[in-house]
Length: 237
Length: 237
Image (cartoon, rainbow over all chains, first blue to last red; front, side, top):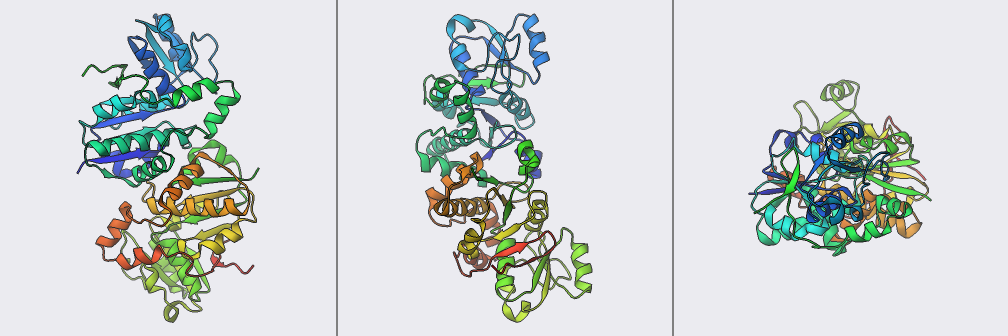
């Protein structure tokens, strides 16, 4: 039977020998606040690709090669970067037909880590939920990887993981790991996004209240975002 | 404000730099299926102490010194051990006034790991829920450490973590980490123990269906079990 598992942080999957040995048919990476919401927004607004990198220095090098560079450290736009990590900055005027290089604290690390588990890696947010779930349903064994929060779990990421599981299980049957049962149970209790975790609070303190609200919007677009291990592009069915 | 956090596996707390630096006032360790349920049962039935050790060899050495040795590997009693890891084996006739040395796959490791975070470590199960929660409420910052399942999360441990949080928050106010919000949400969805995780299924396959049922019983006794970093004994208020 097909299997759904959730990793509550990018490294967590590695702790389990069972998981680290097996290959999944697909991964889906979640960093609701805000990296995967920002990536989906950028592609929806016409960016030609998003290249995730781990380090500021690498991003700056890609900037010299014509990439628009964006990201954050501690929630704040790094010095010399064109863009921060707010989806509001990635509007059509700015990103249309541009290549973007992105580096964030948790999200880009989760994406790059996901290459250990599957070749096909999808980028999910509440914004592109239904289109992503529809695409995921063609795969058997799926690892849902939450970017989390500096190695700790994220309340918001776990909510989206649960929502994805709920919707996938309507389309077809999956066996659920303990982690998947936990995320699903949480989502079933809430029934709608409830962004009151530590990172949501921190973003609100930093003045990003509108981002927090926007990132909880469901199905704002119908983008499927596929990371092939190098770049993230719109998947054209 | 006082803080409750949950670690979904013994190693998970270590992933977060914030947590590994700080000290908690108390830890509570959970391995519902079955180590902490077994420890609580043994103490309730008159065992004078339970000594957790990591290795089979260490347990065998303590056996030579008069300890009754118990535990499991892969759910099964190791060769030469007096007892397995089934609470049903730890009846009064067998354990009264005896010192017990226990080694299990996940639970004893979680207990020994917990020494990194606090001096006062409590051993929790559904069996001794209310008495444990009452004692925990004297502490400010508490880490709830789930033993999990071979490095992965446990559905049953997370349920008990959520139940403990729900009951603690009735007694006094705590700030909840994202992990605590997730466990609480799961428990609020379920409202009662629902033991259908991977380890529960495995135990049922191995013939331990009665253990699974017993370990989901709430407040069977009023033991408070305190691990001082060396041995676990009944805490006498």
